[in-house]
Every structure is written in C-alpha cells, then in structure tokens.
Length: 409
Ligand SMILES: C[S@@+](CC[C@H](N)C(=O)[O-])C[C@H]1O[C@@H](n2cnc3c(N)ncnc32)[C@H](O)[C@@H]1O
Image 1 (cartoon, helix red, strand yellow):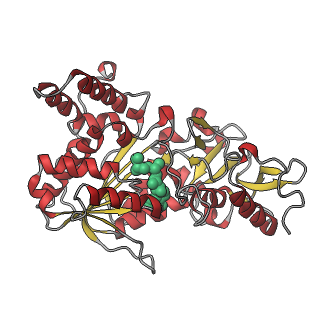
Image 2: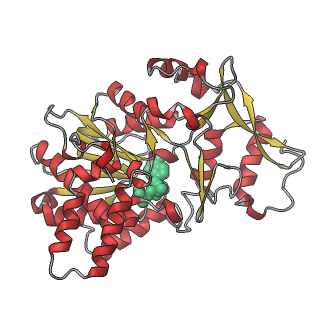
Image 3: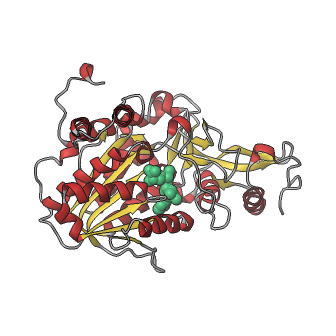
C-alpha cells in the first residue's frame, strides 16, 4: 500500500513528481529502502533519473564546475599522461581510451586535440570510446564529434546484453563518475554499525531517515572487517557518526579490470584515502546534493532534479583493484598530478606563442590556478591502476613532488 498521505499537497522544491511517486510507491511496498536504492532511482531510473533525462544540466553549479568544463588544459594535460601510457605499453595498435561518464564529450574532445598535437602517431591508432548511462548526452556528444570530423576515432560503447565488457588494450578513464555511484549510509550507534534507510513519514508527508540493521548488500561486503584492516577504530567514533558505503564502487572497479586486457585505469574524483576519509568532520556524512548553483547535504529535496554524490574511498578502489589483478599508483592530489603531468608547461607555451592575446592568457592562467588550488579542484584525488604492465618508474603524473608543502600554491 502506498503511504496514505501521498501525493504531497505542494511539491514546490521537492522535485520530479514521477520520481517521488516511484520512490514513495516502493517504500509503500517495502516499508523502507536503502539510500543506495533511493540514489539509484533519483539518478539512474530509466525514465525519471537525473542522469537519464534529456535536460542538459549545468556543471555541478557555480563554484563546483567540473575540471574539464573549466579549461581545455585539463584534458590536454591528461592527453600527455595517456601518451606516456601508450609508450609504456609499446605503442599498441589499436589503442583504446574508454571514458566513463563523458557527458557531452568535452574532455574527450580536448584529449584528442592534445594527442593530435603532441603525439600524432598515437592519434593514428587511437579509438576513443564513450561509455555513459545517459543516452541523450551520448547522442549529443556523438553529433558534436561528427560535426568536428572526429567520428572516425570516437564511438559510443553500449553495455552488452549480458553485461560483459570487451577487454581492450588501453586506458579506462573517469572524471567525477565514482562519486555518483549509489551509496549506502552507515551510522555508528555506539554498539554497532547500522544503516540509515529511507522511509516515508505519513505525518509530515515526506521522506525521512530511519536507522535499521545493515542491508544484505552492505553485510556481504563486510564494512567492519574492511575498516579494521585499514586501521580505522570505529569504536572510538562519536555516536551518530556516519559514513558512506558503496558496493557499486567495487563492481565498477571490477568492471574496469575486466575491460582491460592490458593497460591502465585513471580515476579522478572528489575523495580521500581511508585514513583521511573516516575521521573528523567527515564522520558527519559526505552526502552532497548539487542543484543549480547551490550545494547542500539534503538529498530529500529537488528529487531527481539534483545531482547526488558522496566522497570516494580511494583506498577501497586500490584494494578492489588488487583483488582483481591490478596494481595501483599512490593516490595523489589533482594539483600534484596536473603539475607533474605538465599543466604549467602548457601555460608557459601559451604565453610564448605570438598570437596569444592577453585576455586568453589570463583566462588560462586563472583556470590553471583553480585546477591546482589545494582548497579547490586541486584537492581532488587521482589514482592510476595498472593491469599486466611492467613495473617501471612512476608515470609522469604520479612522480614524487619535491616541493615542500609550504611552497605549494
Ligand atoms: C558529474 S558528470 C561528469 C561528466 C564529465 N566526466 C565531467 O567531468 O565533466 C557524471 C557523468 O557520469 C555519468 N555516469 C554516472 N554514473 C555512471 C556509470 N555508472 N557509468 C557510466 N557513466 C555514468 C553521468 O551520466 C554523467 O554524464
């Protein structure tokens, strides 16, 4: 039975009525749903999910614009790293870049432009595959690629019916995808880790949290065991501490590995290694909701009309990668990664080009600062994964940084 008070009388800022009805109906049948299920419907439901609808979303809003949207230098710097990976693999032909969550393909375009200029021989053998859950974005990306004559190199990769992924030699790349995977919410009650479920409050006529035992999906991945192995002392946490737990991240890392016969993964996102993630103010929970130009920690508004994220556990990525036959680089900040991979050189070169006008240069300079700023996009993390790759010196983006912390911008 659907909750008696549905539908709420005034939807206002509450979100997409169809998504609300679907969630409400499911809660009516199940009593409670996990937050991962709530997120799955709000973001990925085939008809109403935020990531499935035709509406073109702004970037993550105002100050939270994604790095590729900020300046082409982001993608061009990644192109430098990809070219080095190609060299390290002995210049395979073909060489596939499989980009997860490319949206309208802005970063893909910049990467191909960077490769065309700096590694023309790689451009000859490059196959760039777009893999996104949003068909509308993929269609937009492909029509833009056709318009600029890149459809010889770019294609859409459809998930196969049996969910198998074709193993390729190349790079699996993802910027700001992992943080939108459906996340369970766990809470420390003082005695045990329990889960925050989503229920319907008939009196208020709206969704609310309710603490219940862990769902089977969470239990199956043994979060307590994992946290203990990372040296996280859950018993010392303040009562009410909350963390996200994302079995979907494990599946995704497994898929990255299965999709690589030989090659690299490159994952860029907002998150931390376990030692930094599960402590201090982050124990208040890391759900972030982006609607228009505002960010909040309230997932129960603008339902299916706002982006939902949680901070990514990079130690979990490297742990699951190891279980699936991949080695990992150290987890580095985006600021360090871009600096080491040559972002600054792009700016210097731009300054030296006679045709560069001042406005263009200052725009690029401002973007570079934002991309590496430790309190801004620079604090994103980057990790490289390696499958069947010889152990060699660190990849350029992961080379140790000599600069003392005090001298970093
Ligand atoms: C925040 S956007 C980032 C877009 C782009 N990578 C950027 O940095 O501007 C997240 C993108 O990931 C896609 N996405 C979300 N979950 C995905 C998944 N499981 N597999 C592939 N794409 C996914 C969304 O449709 C969306 O295009």
